[in-house]
Length: 271
Image (cartoon, rainbow, N blue to C red; front, side, top):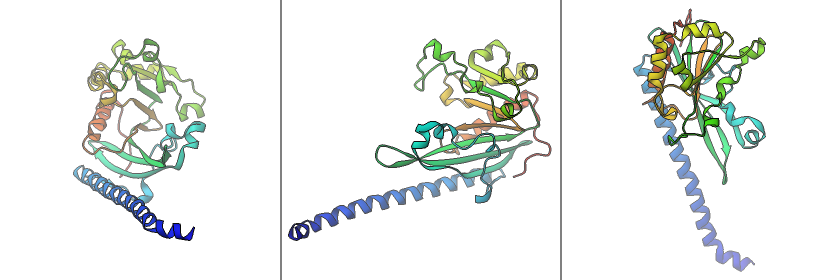
């Protein structure tokens, strides 16, 4: 037995070295990627006259309304596959015109077939004057490849039909809003105040919303789901912040708010 181990020791040493090298290479690559991403976010914040929040300040403004990566941790399967729970990692605070904007990022470790992998989510938040709780959800008429879905799936109300925390706590009815027919073809809208929401969908707001929507919801500047709640308008997407494209989404949201007659927070949330 000892002779066998002695003969195999060079091979074992090589295997250990290869495995160790692989882990070191992955660690080095991850560190390099994180450093590059942080530099890109800092450059974006600087170009906007904003800042990257410190480690103690990265919690999302809307964290009490929507926990980070909620859809990835719900249910038994979500909890079972969680290696590290979600946490907020970074946030950029900046002003866009009169609007106070925060773009933040969260991550978690999810189990996969071999070990685990890091999943990310980013969140865009805008501070507004108080408005009636509302959700605007994109109707998913095609799959991610642009192929039409079956009518029953395409006609579903989607996540906009789920009442937000504020409406639930205040025990207010969560109702579909009557919106102009071109909007209703592409979006579902729910609220606690259908009359106020109907007034907000001005011709200018309708034109902007449809113009930003595009044919494929998965590559659109307009978010799949936009939530209006507790003086905030926010949306989440299951990727890291993309410094080259995130401003297109921010501006799509702000353009809609301007045309709906919604005012910035007063006093605004400060960076």
